[in-house]
Length: 151
Image 1 (tube, rainbow, N blue to C red):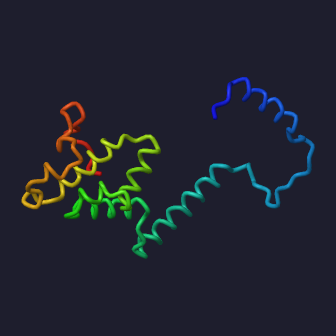
Image 2 (cartoon, helix red, strand yellow):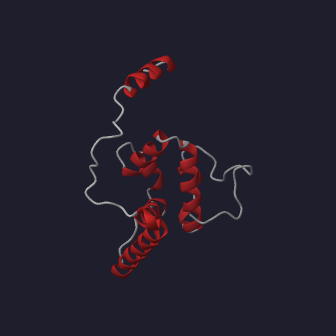
Image 3 (cartoon, rainbow, N blue to C red):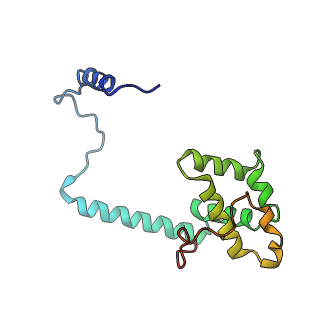
């Protein structure tokens, strides 16, 4: 249910009555030294670099790398159309999640088809025009990015 801006202002006004007291006791258990913020940030960058290096040595993939591998498995699957259209497939759930987050369903399908066309042998895609979701296989020239990144 949508509230009016007046309702929001009224709630904000009531919330201001519960503002924290500036003279309240300090609840921090560890005091931060704010005298050398640049050094603290540099140490954090060092910890992050060491963590990434350790993950690389362990062969641990990032969530992004796992996502790309899953996408490649989907787009190179012989049952690509069925994976897109089945309401019960994990692919359909992922696409629906992206649509709920504001992405256009046709654009999501288009990106997946473009990646499929880039990585699946044309002989394996014979007759695939009927396997699409009804959109043309190639995006319009206004939408096409000729030399874009290979995501």
